[in-house]
Amino acid sequence: MELKTIVTGFTGTENCTITPITNGLINTTYLVEDYDADEKFILQKINTQVFPFPEIITNNHILINRLLEDGNYPLELVKPKETLSGNFIIKDENEESWRMLSFIEDTKTFFKIPDIKTAYESAKAVGAFLNTVNPEYLPYIQSPIPDFVNFEKRISDYQISLQSASPDLLDNAEQEIEAMNELLSLPEKWIEMEKEGILPKRIIHGDPNVRNILFDSNSRPLAVIDLDTVTISTILYDFGDMARSYTNTLDEDNGNADHNFNPQIYRTVKDGFLLSLKKKLTFEELENLDYAAQTVIYIQAVRFLTDYLNGSTYYSTKYAEHNLDRTRNQLQLLKGLRKYLRVD
Ligand code: GN1
Image (tube, rainbow, N blue to C red; front, top):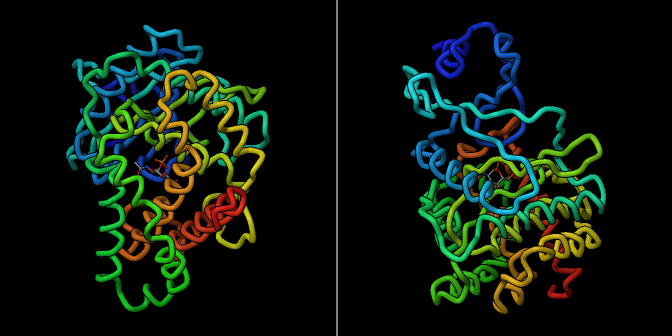
């Protein structure tokens, strides 16, 4: 099916332009300019290798938007657009799934946090999002990716990849594997806490990295986007992932740096995150923020390395060693954080 035919299924017009946008590592994204309605939209091909049930992510998105609309949420919402026949997904003849989202005008995104103020405002935005979508009860949110926040499974996938990787890849990644194995016990406490039910179940964003915030021209957050990974888990994951993404002074795939962790941003991210959430979080959650940041960075490094050893099939890559550079970048970030926390 041509892209224009898919757009027509949503908008009813072919009078449009369609331009690719490069942002995430998973879905394929286009900007659609509809000249009949004089409106812009986001068109996305959902990566069904990663999200096997696109309907789940649409249902979750609608539910989350409802919670945000009902709450006192200060930011704007991105809304899934219905097709002309009343669905939210179009399946093409290759069984690819497409969805359309509303477009917020005059925004920009960052690949890394530009300064302390933006770090604070962004963490505050994610904190407000999480506070609003977590009222007293948990609505029916389905997991879009099985075992997404199952760290025991992440470690076992890594160990399997060590067994099955080609000698060449194992050779290239020798140093990274060694560094990874030295910290293999780091996620144990997390896994234990989850098993014992010490950490409350909450709605989490699942991917609150800096690329998933839209900013206005003054770099103030306008919207928290990409709700595909919304699931029920521990909120420590979101804190950890935000800390991971915001404190990185380099692009996530720059593996050549000596140090890339910004401690000032780390403190700021904590302050911003806790602004609306502090009263809601339990003692165990508050006690484990520093631990969570380390563990989520570590697991991200594990994920990049596992994908490298598996032949880079999950994350989109531009060159053979791309995932290895990403792994190195995360390991360096973790080193910086652990040095700052004096746990090394
Ligand atoms: C992916 O979709 P995107 O690029 O925002 C990944 C996240 C990782 C991130 C690392 C569904 O996020 O979990 O933290 O890359 N999303 C999925 O950059 O796996």
